[in-house]
Length: 174
Image 1 (cartoon, rainbow, N blue to C red):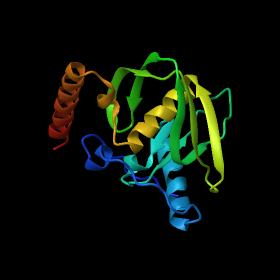
Image 2: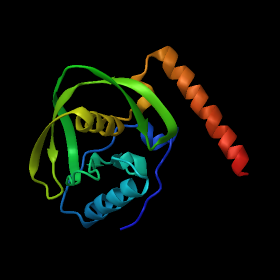
Image 3: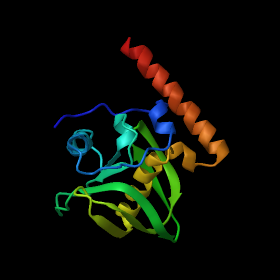
Image 4: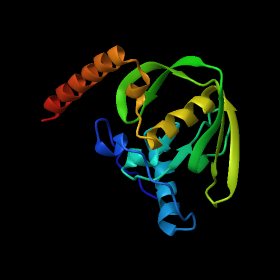
């Protein structure tokens, strides 16, 4: 296992729809899954999509464990939202847009289908944090970042502010 570099906005790989995974029994895919889990934990984050580590594949990992509850890591290959219901507004951050938190609207409940790590079909019905995390990571597979969930005026304002902060940080690092 290895911690991979998390790509940050405006990296090109974050702007394009990821390609479907064709074979699950590929050793390289299993290594990618392990690396993504390690990278997510190292960040630390609760979810990660393959494009965030520079790989254009429809693959996400999620870990909503806490001190109080040990929940198994979720691995979804080729996930798709098949049902969505309700609407909820909440704050979200993103490992690919460090130090930026925005308020976005998401479905309150979702049903997601995909393949598990072994290639077996699986379906997850979720609400709360899991529903939001699933939608967030699937957005990455569709070439969307948090900014794309904002109205056009707010999107441009937040994007400009983020890019200015990024440039300041880069100048300080020189």
